[in-house]
Image (cartoon, rainbow, N blue to C red; front, side, top):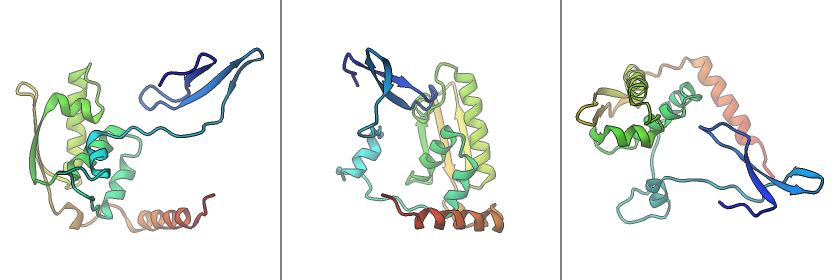
Length: 180
């Protein structure tokens, strides 16, 4: 996005999760402008599904247990992306090029050793949650292989009942809230 000469785009968020504000330059200094819209970036696969491009799936069903895992990873966006990436696969076992998977999921490709360690740690967590059965990270062959547990959502949840009650209470409060 190119800003007009009398406006500048300023990141008030972080480099990993940028939030931009537009500031107008005037003789009195710089002033924030109210936003008139929101720009969303969608990955190609999701945009193809939303536009119902031939060969894309029309919808994704998610089990209620998904939300407990999402809460657990709430401050780890790369792990959320990995988790959803695994859930959306139609085959029980799948392979991807490791370097492309790391980059696509948001791990730092400039530091591959650290990125692979973080990926393995995330995969271990998902295996502990029974989302995965097995995984293999082959750095030399540039291959990531994952076998997901197709019945993970049917198994006993690791969230205790008071946490779940709190979540549903908060959800109902949110859903009951009227928005302008």
